[in-house]
Image 1 (cartoon, one colour):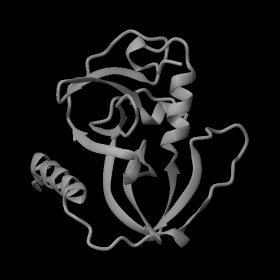
Image 2: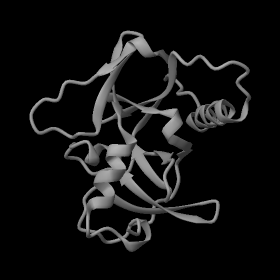
Image 3: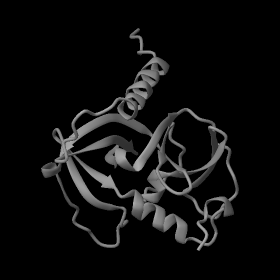
Length: 180
């Protein structure tokens, strides 16, 4: 019988590598590249810009709260804060509502977390490999660019567009609505 690698050790390695990317000084900045988090949602590849994220959490307990929004999963605790958690797949239009084991903390006035199923690594991508996305039909406006990462084309999730859509809704828990 084949043995599986210890997933908690792998998760810890990935978490340390992600944290190091924010902690280590960058002596020179290549302004012709972007750093992306490569994530998977229901088996499909996506990317988040590291400049729009504040951290990556794995296997955090999400406390469900009632909401009429299917994409709102509940809240998690992080460094003394109560952080609302949204299912990235549901926001992107996927039918299944499932709290993924990974949560990307989003840089915003009020921190939120986006839950997704797979963390596939970090990519340093040349700006020339990032192009505007073609909108097809009435799909989500959250995908405005795509990146070629190796041989994979990854739609880049626009965090700003996601936050705008989340904050427009009137039925959100009061703790995350921005005051006018």
